[in-house]
Length: 214
Image 1 (tube, rainbow, N blue to C red):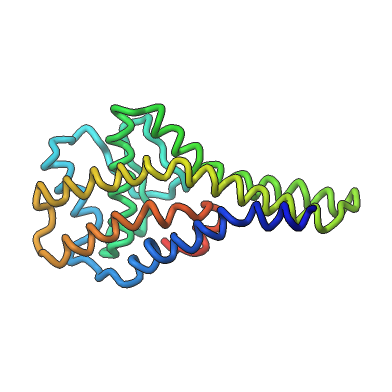
Image 2 (cartoon, rainbow, N blue to C red):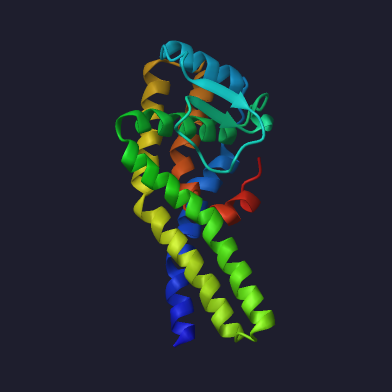
């Protein structure tokens, strides 16, 4: 029974991992770097959108997005980075922020799903590890608990994926309509990386930060 539960729980997690690789990380790994930095691109985009009210801060940040204080927080490494993957993640952050202004409850649901992917597996691991050592919890139960936490996190990410895909399409439309990038190659690289970003996020965040660096 426990083995069936483990296998069943891991199905959405493994399926998400496969799709994240095929349509996400593989696209990022093959996309060319951009000719300008993430900071420069975001500054020009916000100017053309006439959204000087949105502040961008490059600092040590929480792994999940907040849409409540008028600012977008990105890692320090993004400031001078010309990585199309970094630029794509910045675009998703901005897209989610803009969507939140009109569909706050839907975006908040997606953000909670992402946050669950960071917290739940770690919390379950700590609890079952303690129970395994102190209460001699069977190893199969420990494995089932971990599989269940990964499975639940993956299901939540699957169910809310459409929100992030909408944010990606919103930003792609802005990139193309405003002719944001000065070079066609840069535009193609940024567009493909931005569309790939939601697929990457099918991986629960606790594992994603080890798979996707920066």
